[in-house]
Image (tube, rainbow, N blue to C red; front, top):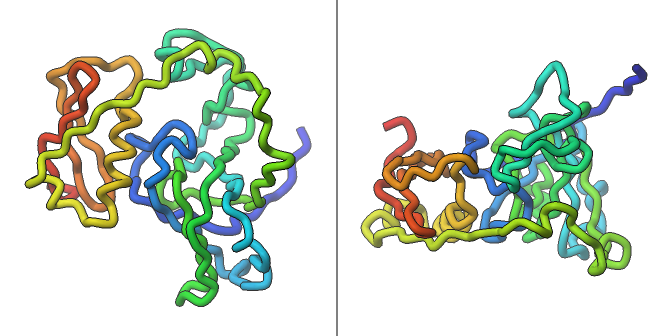
Length: 230
């Protein structure tokens, strides 16, 4: 099988140190903030000339948290409850012949002169902290937007969002600039699709915190917010 080398041009800095709780598609939690920090070889401001004129970007990245030696021709999409198999090329599963992901994010800002060189600030990323970026391309509405497109089996499944209840005294433990992103991520229902025990307490690592929550009748209630590791 032919192969060719690729270089990591950047890495993502996000509030998710693990895969658990990351929205399953980009844009589902638009308040989530992340940064794209370039590798030393690519810290050239000229490479970003004109990028600030675009509102959205495509990030092409590697599923670094899901690397496997083998791939499967069928997978179990979470959207189908994890109990039906579909062809891997009919899904966005990370378990692919090549572990490559694609995310459309909103460009919130460009800082060309940080101590680490140029940095992109984005909204709505579905990426774990440290995810390697393979390439960045501008989103082009005239070419990339297809209002008439159909979504296959995803058009026939619900996209439920949870009501999020964070008691004020617990919300105070979350940095103000992280609160909207946390609420958006929780509303996407971080639980595995096959778990529905209303008594189970889940723990979401987020922005240096451990957020404990339960879910009952469509409402996610935060039970505790602790420093990570406690």
